[in-house]
Length: 100
Image 1 (cartoon, helix red, strand yellow):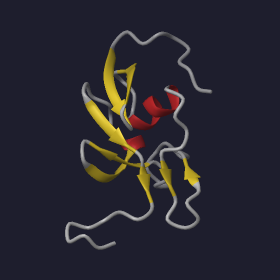
Image 2 (cartoon, helix red, strand yellow; image 1 turned 60 degrees about the vertical axis):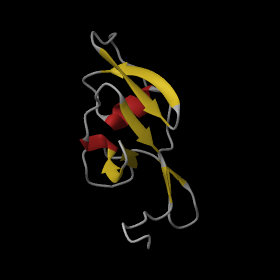
Image 3 (cartoon, rainbow, N blue to C red; image 1 turned 180 degrees about the horizontal axis):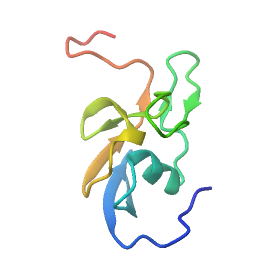
């Protein structure tokens, strides 16, 4: 679906939902996911519908993922780094107290 016009010079390794990918070191998490063919990054709270990065500039909050154990990170606003672990989210996040 998405691909770079040029081959990236520097690549980093990331893990997404247990799968390993090598991505452009200059990409945001959202662009790395889209480039890897991952379009649904979370499920909505209402209806469990798949959601994907939309605006790619931090406005819509459709690209929320868990990055290195931290929930509700905007994938479009976070640059990738080597060894990053990304997990898709489903439904509402839980609080430290265990509630929603």
